[in-house]
Length: 156
Image (cartoon, rainbow, N blue to C red; front, side, top):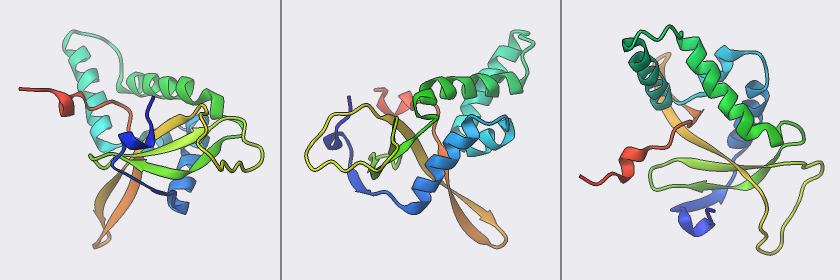
């Protein structure tokens, strides 16, 4: 279980972050696989392609779309409790690596306010900011992380 002390920084959730979390849940449970894939971070797309390519080397007939569907199904299973009446924590937590954890809560019909430390079930949505050069300017977009970065904790 993660607590706030496990993070480098906490801040108030921005409207863009809140909107992204809601959009992700909507897209996740829609039939639009392309929109889902567009919300996944570039590093995780690369990892997924690496898994797919490794399987292809062993004559596995799976297509890339099968790999993407598998990821989406894993995400759907993880976030199924917040499919309906999803609440979003007003605090975002940042790791030292720059990932943001947006906590989603289940069965939120009306806003909740906690005045003391409270333990509740949350569903962490890990997001990163990715920059891209478009139309002669740098744009930043939030993207969902899928895989854990084991390499960050490996010792040589």
